[in-house]
Image 1 (cartoon, rainbow, N blue to C red):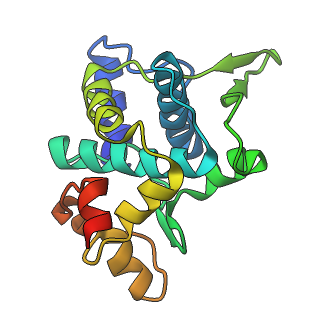
Image 2: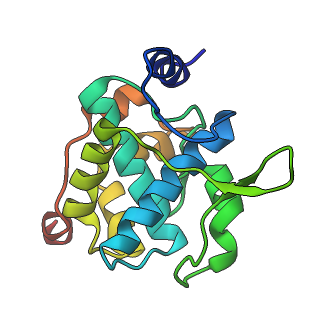
Length: 183
């Protein structure tokens, strides 16, 4: 069992409603994506598929650095334009360069669709940090930030495109877009 699943199980046992209608590894990352899309929408921020992928990565990084806990078990793959989570790609790539206009909903046994969202304050602290820092940037700018030499993505991509390693993610600095373009 991953630290993330254990943490959620522990939170539920202690009476904390960590999330609604959560099951399975793929739903965990889709839960994170829903929360990012919802919060960005409340802030009036557009959300393309590419931007979502990079923001998921940055929220994962922030949470991992702050709490030493993975938000999800899905591998973060090193694609040409930066970190990508395959199940999120499968869910949202149909939007291409357009803004995403729906969020993931799970069908329960009764056949009704239920939207899942994350309910933990520590998660929203990480999300708020990332959206404040990077929310106004587009997917291309966020991709450029992940491409700085020495980032977890750069290390993985140069190593035959393997998935990103959590140890490399933890070591990674936080970059400003201005600094990236000044290089």
